[in-house]
Every structure is written in C-alpha cells, then in structure tokens.
Amino acid sequence: MKRFFSLSLLLIFLLVLAHDSSEARLQSCRPSGKIKGIKPPPGQCNQEHDSDCCVTGKYYTTYECSPPVTGNTRATLTINSFEKGGDGGGPSECDNNYHSDSTPVVALSTGWYNGGSRCLNNIIIRGNGRSVTAMVVDECDSTMGCDKDHDYQPPCPNNIVDASKAVWEALGISDPDDVGSLEITWSDA
Image (cartoon, rainbow, N blue to C red; front, top):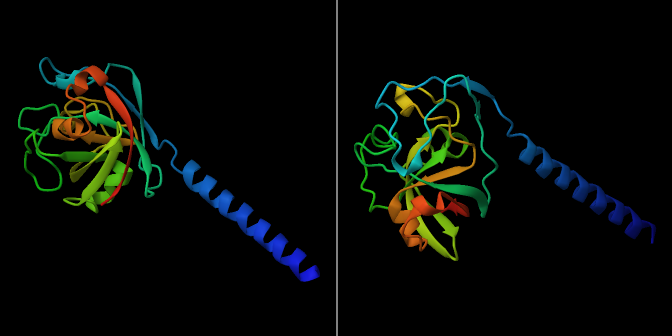
C-alpha cells in the first residue's frame, strides 16, 4: 500500500511538472519589441487583399518566436500574393522566385519559418472542414516591417500562415478577401 501511495505521488508530481513545462513553453513566446510606423511614400504600399500599410507614429509589436509547433498547431490564415507585383513584395526568401497564385504556397511567421529550416518543405493546413498541402516558400516577418523591404506593411503577428489563393480555394473559400482571415491548424507534412 505504501509503495502504491509513493508511485501515486510520483505520478502526480510528474503530471504537474509536465503541465508547468507546457505552460512555460506557451508563455515563452512574448513580444520582442516594437516598431514605430512611418507613412509609406506615395504608391509604395501595395494594398491588394486589403493589406495594411504602416501608419506614422503607430507602434507595432514584433516577435522573434511563434507558439510551439505540434501535430495540430493553431494559426491564423491570411491571403497573400506571391506573384511579381503582388502584395507579397519581392521574390520568396526560400528560392528567390515568384510563385503563381494558383500554386499552394505559404509564408510562415518568423518563429515557424525558423531561419528557413522549413523552406521548400510541405505543411498540411486544416480549416473549414478540409485540408490542403502547401509548400513553404517565404517568411512572414514578425521582427521587422514599415520599410521598403517589407512593402511598408507592419510586422506579421507570430501565428500567421500567409497563403496563396490556391490554398484558400482548396479549403473551399473562393473569395478570401471577403473572409479576411481564417482560424486553422497546421502541421509539418
């Protein structure tokens, strides 16, 4: 009986420790700073897909991390054009190329992009009762913004999967501009 009691206490201790560890990981992704917005020069911020342009004097939160990746990571899906002249700005970070909006490709927030470790790898996105496989081609920068390199757009939040129109269509949403964003889950393929 004493042994059973000791094992029970040990099990409870381990469960509490595991819970505290997972709580610490979830809370470990805190803002890393702020960027003060500047007004973009005329015609310099592409507002395709209702993209935001930085506002002079407004402060934008930055992150160097993203929530932990699990087999079912929660995220917010946003729309992005990876084509030349699209609201994604320059060519994709992973391969220095532009990509057709009819190809399922994504950009991940800085922490999930992880210095390019997911470049050209596939992820599985689940939302709206469907799923789609998409290739990671770019970073949705959570550390910088409001400058020419970032099309004068604010930094990305730390939980973004920025997707081409093909991803949205595969999830059964033909006009993502009407939706704006969608709560999804994703995992590495």
